[in-house]
Image (tube, rainbow, N blue to C red; front, side, top):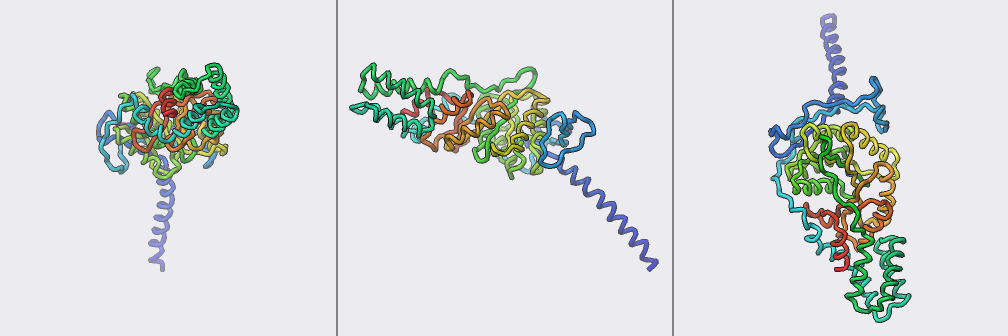
Length: 404
C-alpha cells in the first residue's frame, strides 16, 4: 500500500493541473474569430490584422453577464483575433457581378408581373364610361389594398378627381398619364437615394444592415456587396450575426464569390459588437472603401435585443462614423413593416430602406407608405432570388412598372 501512495498522489496532481488548464483553454477558444478572405488567402493585400483589440474605457471593469447590454463607456469587449484563414470554407469561383446601371429596367418584367393588379385595376376603373363616386370609392379601396396608406391614398384620389373633372377626359391613355404623374409625385423622385459609400476623413464608409428575422438581411448584404464591387469599390464584410447558425459562413460565401473578405467569429454567440469593431478596424488598416456589417435578426418588441443593436453602432463609432444604416423590410408584410421600421428608427437612426420580395406581392404601395412614415427613402429593392436581383430604386421606373 505504501508503494502505491506516490503513484496515487502523482495521479491526483496531474488531474488538478489539467483541470486548471481546461477553463483557460475554453476562455481562449471563445475569443477567436476568423477572417474569411478571398480565394487567395495568401495575398498580403487581403491580410487582416494579426491581433485583437480590447475596448476598455474603465480599467478593471468586470465583464457583464451573458445577455447584459451595457453602454460603451462600461463595456469590455472580448478580444477578437482575425487570422488570415479561410476557416475551411469551400473555395468558390470568383464571379463578375452584373452592371448596376439600368438594373431596375432589366428587372422590370418581374415587377410588372407581380404588381400589375394595382396598375390595371386603377386604369380599368378610371377609363370606364362613367366616373362617379362609386368609381372613386373603388379607386380608393384599390390603393388601400396596395398598402399605399390612408393619407397618401386620400391625397392621390383627391388630386386625380379634380384633374379628371376639370379636363373631362375619358381617354384611357390620358387618364393613365394623369395617374402616372400623381404616383410619381407620391413616390417622390427628389429624395436622395444615393448610398454613402465613399471614403472620407481617411476612413472607409461604414454601413450597418438591420432588420427583423427572416427578411433576408444576410442575402441582402451579399447582393449589395456585388453592387459595390460592380462599381469598383473595395469592400470588407463584418459577420456580426453571431447567433444564427451558419450565418457567418453564408455571408463569407457571398463575399468569396466576388473576392470580398469577411471578418467573422468561429464561435456561435460571440459578442457581435466585437466582430463589428474588428471589421471596421480591418477596413481602416487595409484602406478599403466600404465596411458592411451584417447584424442578427431581432424582433422589434424585444427591448434587450434592440439595445444590443444600439451598442453595436456605438462601439463601431469609437473608430469611425457610421455613414449608412439600412433597414431591410419584407415588402409582403405590408403595414406591419411600418411598425417594425418605426422601432428600428428610434434605436439606430435609419438612413435608407431596402425592400425585399417586392416581386412576390401586388402591394407596391408600401414604397410610398414607408417613406411617408419615416421620411427616409427606399434606396434598394429586391426583385428576385438571383445574386444580381438587387437594384437601386428609381421612382419613375418603379411607377412605370406598376402601370405596365
